Image (cartoon, rainbow, N blue to C red; front, side, top):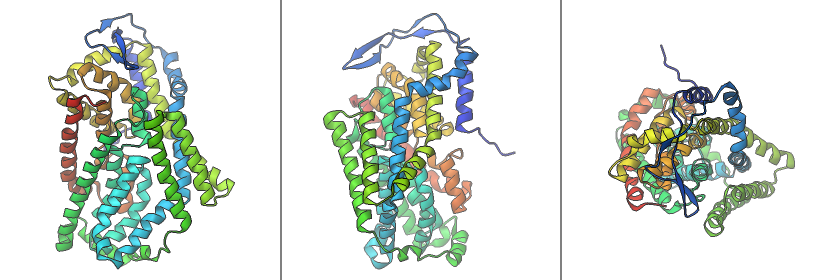
Amino acid sequence: MKLRLPNTYVLLVSLLALIALSTWVVPGGKFETTVVAGKTLVVPGSYHLVEARPQGLAALLTAPIKGFVEAALIIGFVLIVGGAFSVLQKTEAIDAMIKSVARAHSRSAWVRAAVIPVFVGLFALGGATFGMAEEAIPFVMIFIPLALALRLDTLTGMAIPFVGSQIGFATAFLNPFNVGVAQGIAGVPMFSGLGYRAICWAVATAITIGFLQWWAVRIRRTPELSPTFALDQERRKTLDLVSFEQFAGMTARHKLVLWLFAATLLGMIFGVVRFGWYIEEIAALFLVMALAVGLVARLSADELTGAFLHGAKDLVGTALVIALAKGTVILMRDGQIIDTLLNALAPLVASDSPVFAAQKMFVIQSVINFFIHSGTGQAALTMPIMAPLADLVGITRQTAILAFQFGELATAIIPTSGITVGVLALSGVPYTTWVRWMLPLQGLYLIMALVLLAPPALLGWQ
């Protein structure tokens, strides 16, 4: 019998019910708080019991709508940014850039050698900046024939867009859907700590590129080593391996759209660093970007609004996840058990070394990621607990956010991830084959995460 886990919504609703029940048995408790540099921090050792407030059926049923109300700013931000990126995709500028580079592979030995570094870097950059994740799925069907044409295998063709975007998402430095939301909830300045996160992204991307380059050398030398060798041979008979060469090239409009996108990212960095922009200003900037790229690409009013609404509609599910996750926090807060849970979790995470504390927090987030894959939803669910927990165990909230991000490093092999399942279905590669091939790379990611959590934990990274 095949084990099938419930989806994210069922899990969160079940969690709401479990929390409501727990308020009847878990004692109420409170920590004292103090304000340091404008941030409210938990005072370690100040936990004390208070009167319990059990939450009944009415509280359970109203928690989701209360979650929508209290998370309205974050939900609106996610919907607007999602709509803006849908308009960007409607212009086909990003697709054109990728196809243009792919077409050049047959004309230059240097381009053939650079295909893996360039494309993994691009997809990782997409994950790190605008949260590219599901958007990478269609590219699998472009990069599998490209990889086969370069005497590589199906696994490499899958990994370039899929693993590239996933690793970029997990080590993001400008991603509004995980870093932005987590920092907003934790009370940390939006996109602060960008420098160290960029270093983490560069290290993770370099590890991914190095692994794929090593595999490429082996497969070119001995194709039979590939677990998908038989599948590759069949595909070479049936797939159109030169379709990407027929691409006409990037137009002036495509290039201008990409320049506008780059200018938006630079403007966001400048606004956050120089003027302390927060969710409202960043959402407004992306709204302006959507209008600008729509005008440049000569989208009609119906096309522009249709694309925007399509992108926002695709994230309605994410908005519901945020609301449900916020509802869990509301139930725990009203039942006065959040601090009790913090007090119980603290010994599990606490350590004589802040490094070990950060690493244990990373392990906890990795386990949670198995059940909740949405970066936004996971941030909404866990950061209200993990941010004050960081205060208790002696690490900064910025470090706790990095541990939360690194918890997503294993998404590429999680069988409960819709993205993973979708990619495997498109590529025709069995899950067990994919996982066996990915395990060495996942081992490298694990070591990387444990090592990269050490400096911020030791230095009190803010």
